[in-house]
Image (cartoon, rainbow, N blue to C red; front, side, top):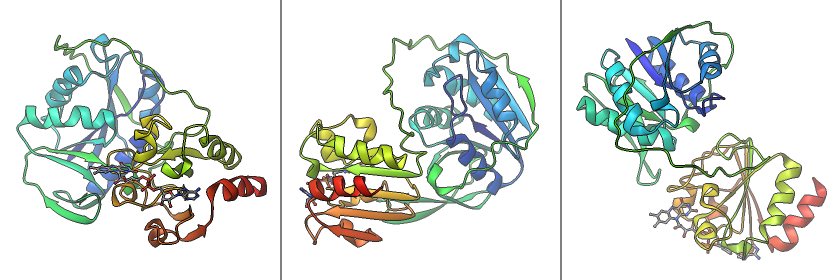
Length: 309
Ligand SMILES: Cc1cc2nc3c(=O)[nH]c(=O)nc-3n(C[C@H](O)[C@H](O)[C@H](O)COP(=O)(O)OP(=O)(O)OC[C@H]3O[C@@H](n4cnc5c(N)ncnc54)[C@H](O)[C@@H]3O)c2cc1C
C-alpha cells in the first residue's frame, strides 16, 4: 500500500495540517508519499521531505499550480493518484476544494473529514454536526479521503529523509484564472493551530467590544475566534468563525465569551481539552460542555481576567 498525501502550503511554508494528515496516513499503514503542487515551492518540498515517516516527496512545480487552483491541481492528483491505494488531504478550504474533484475524476466516492482510522478501508467520521459518528467502509480502488486535523496528533516535522522527485506533468485546465487575494493579517496564532482560543459571541454586542478579547488573547498568546452570530452581525470577519460552518478547533484551552453554546458552535470546539465559559445566563447550554463556567457579565469578567493574567 502506498498513500499519497497532498501538502497544504502557500509556496513558502508547509502548513501544520499536513503533519496531522501524514499522521492519519501512518495509521492506515504503508509507504507515504507527499505531493507538493505549487510554484517555486522548493522550501516546502524540503520541509515535507523531513517529515517523520514520509519516504518520497513529489514536487510538481509549475505556473499552473502557483495558486493551487483546484481545476488545475485536481487532474494532477487524479493522474498521479491512480497508482496509490489512498489519497489524503487535510479538510481545509484547499483540501475540500481539490479532493471532491479528484474523487469525481477517479469515479470513486470521497470519504470526508475522517477523525479516526479503524483499518485500511474503514474510517470514522462525524455526521449531524458531530452528534453522531459514522463508521464508513469503502471498497473503492483508490480511497480519496479528507482528514479532520484535530482528530490526529501531528507527526514530527523533523526526522525523515525522503527523496524529492520532480513531477513534470502540467495541467492547465484553462477554465479559471487567479485574480487576487486578500489575506487577513494578524500577529496572533492561526485559529486552527493555536493552543489557546478566546472566542466571542453575540453577547459582545459589537465589533469594537472585541478589543477586550484581543487584549486578553494577546496576554495569553491566543487566537481569537467567534460564533456565527457575531460574524453574521458584522462584528468580526468570517475567517474567525468557529463551528459547523466555520473552523474546527481543538486547542488546549477554549474560552467562550458571550456564546450560548448552540450545537453548531459546539461542533467546532467541543473537542477542546479544557473549555471555559463566561456567560451571564446560568442556563446557557455552553455550561453543559464547559469544564469551568463563570456566570458573570463579560464586560466585568473579561477585563478583570485580563488584569490577572
Ligand atoms: C446550518 C447552520 C450552521 C451553523 N453554523 C454555525 C457555526 O459554524 N458556528 C456558530 O457559532 N454558529 C453556527 N450556527 C448558528 C447557531 O445556531 C447559533 O445561532 C449561534 O452559534 C449563536 O451564536 P451566539 O452564541 O454568539 O449567540 P446567542 O445564541 O444569541 O448567544 C449569546 C449569548 O451571550 C450571552 N450574553 C449576552 N450578553 C452578555 C454579557 N454582557 N455577559 C455575558 N454573557 C452575555 C447570552 O446569555 C447568550 O447566551 C449555525 C446555524 C445553522 C442553522
